Image (tube, rainbow, N blue to C red; front, top):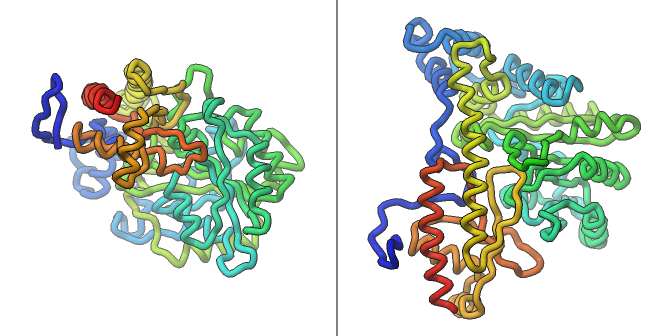
Length: 444
């Protein structure tokens, strides 16, 4: 690998990987409070020492008391440790301004989506089950859906309007499925991944009316809900809007909402802890869901512990609050990175980085010279894949090519995670700018 420095290539020592949302790999340190509690749960002797704050020791003792045998090495109940499920339920109720959340409707899992997908899809039916999915969107979700036998029915976000979701496009997608499959669900990502848009309350209401009219199950990925950076953007959950709309929507629209410790500011990607809350699902189906979750082992206990810490963080009166409150510094870092990223990319010829509202990704458009497009075709690559491969090989920066998201208009993009430290961001931008200027010169 090589680095550009004043136009001279040098042997590369490290790769900056920003193709996936992994804050720790991007130089951000894990939250001290989280790691302290995890350490005490794994090594209970720390509970009786004075090396950890008292609230950390108390939290670890409480969590171990909720584990069978007082150990994180034990299996848990199917839906997760009851005390942690309750913490998740309380978190949702607070988030939604008092709209009640019921623990019996919550399941903790290693991811946050996949078991729920299987209840919606009958792989042996004719026609096959279809799910409307966003483009650009989360490719792992699409692969999981097709993996359980669903037909992917793409709907395209409006690039010219900041990747806005238009109900007219949902109607078009639904119409396109005729004769191919029977759509059973609509999958939403809010805030968007990798596009960074945040849906307005009005947009959410329109989507809810649409799924109600078309009798579709609503699947909502809300894992970036704490990562909202647009000055005029606020996250509001689908469940909150659904209940505020009242009858008949609040009584009939079937909803599954997802959240996870792997994404956003927690960034504990390796701990594998997420939850799904189910709303308005028939009791008979809920019994089947319980059986479905029961056939697998429980979610990793450390992931469940991290979920408890995310949904029930230290309060201002707790000794660990000042350290945990550093999450606000991380939010400031995200905003700073975003502004810096947009400033630099929009100054480079051929790049356009639109305003960004939420999530941890940027998805700038890349206008490539005709010679670069022709060269990419010669070597059998999509143009933005060709660009990303050269960027990796010559500058040590690993990004995602836009063609991976199957855009319909043939435009070129790169996906970049901006949830990284300021130091890594500056190094990323330095390498990217030096590479891009040379690339454009070579193919001009």
